[in-house]
Length: 369
Image 1 (cartoon, helix red, strand yellow):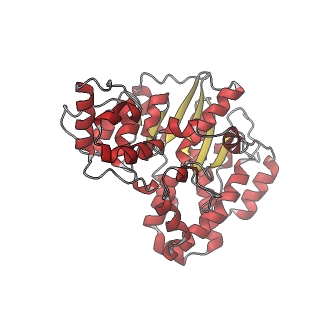
Image 2 (cartoon, rainbow, N blue to C red):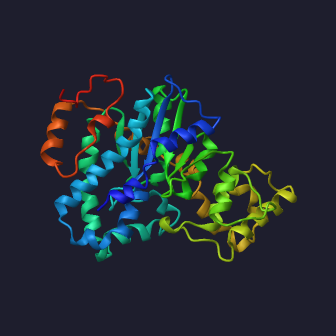
Image 3 (cartoon, rainbow, N blue to C red):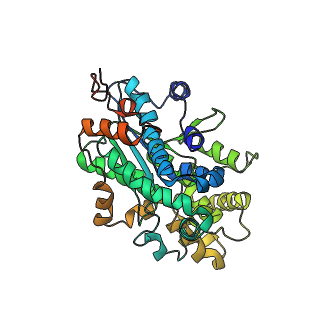
């Protein structure tokens, strides 16, 4: 039932080879370390929309086992790709969980931040089976992944889940393990496109095997394609992305668009500010452009920017907030119990334990031979 949405997020290994071969700025070798971040909300949203009827009629135990297995096996898909090339990898699956957070940090700025998302899962009865499945499956997947070296499920809870890659990278910087690492984010969420400004690469799946790697060099063309912008005159810099999205809003996060501003009007405003030497083409903060915006829009644009721009949000995190994420990066080892758990609890939806194990174990502990 859930295989299709998860499969859509598994970029074929042959396609990954093709993408990496064509991207000159990525030079992977046996001395490389890669961090792969997988946005789980993308996947769950597709399950919710495509399989709702079947979900509601399904058996809860089977639903939970299938979702758990698919989360593990999606992680295994990317881990195994790098294992085959003898490249050390860490995999972080992340999402906006639990579904009823203790509080929501960005609501200090936007009162209804993510209200649509939470109401859908907690108040809309037609999604009750999905909610119950997620609520039961996530803790199981999270616990299982603690026993697999270098693979983790990270719950965002009170913070915006898109911050997870940035917070995890700050952990590696603190531990002195970030030097020379490549950071890849598997996502279809445009909100996360701004990561290209900080040295991350977006692995954007596509159901027709037209997956792409988005970098600082091609992200502008991708966004223009997303919004069907043909004109070469309406150009912008990757640095402008959070400013642009502050005008356009973001429906899943309940960030409302600025009235009468679409993509074309926003780009024209940016160009006008550049022409008038109010900002430079590489301006990345809304404060620089406020004097060029109609006064009645200023407060709304500023609030939108503060819950859109990743660095602004990261800078508002306390040390305790960051340690909430750091403390979820746990490695425990009990391969025998994992194998027994797979045999006993997942006969219908087996876990890809051999593929997800680290390549260092040449005699694989999950292999019975």
